[in-house]
Amino acid sequence: MATAVHQARVHEDEVWQKSQVDPVVKQLEAADKQQDCYMTAARYINDGYASLPDTEAQKQDALTVQQVFKDFKFRVNDGYGAEADKILQMGQNLQPKQEFLTQIGAWQWYVKAAQKASLVRQLLTQRAQTKGEFVKGELKAARRQTDLAIADLYRVINAMNDLMPS
Image 1 (cartoon, rainbow, N blue to C red):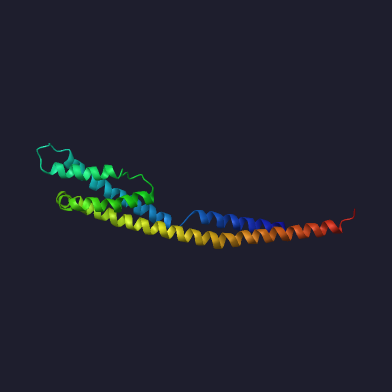
Image 2: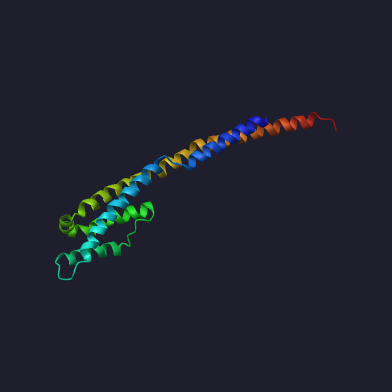
């Protein structure tokens, strides 16, 4: 009986450990890292033009784009969802400067970052769904097995207690 309780507890612990590691996390981390690289490239390219002398025509466009990053308080170390949302929302503000960003070679990196941001959003939704389903199903069943094993052990202990002379 004690062995059954122990085995049930070990199984429950294994299931709990699995519930804490979602298979989507590695994909999410990879997509986030790529999104960070693309946005960093786009930002650095633009910042180079923003640092040009005031007499250069492209400086004003670069300063406008730079302001979009400031307005959104964009940082690559924001949380997955916050960062992805900012990238996607920034597109509306960067659209008027698409021609400029294309000329300087930054637009292609923004587009790739936006694609990765969409993937991050999908993976976050998928993670929320799979994690919830897993916890509700397998972990609940494992806990039920542990409870049943403990209940069986108590029944045996109580039966032995009744058989023992006083």
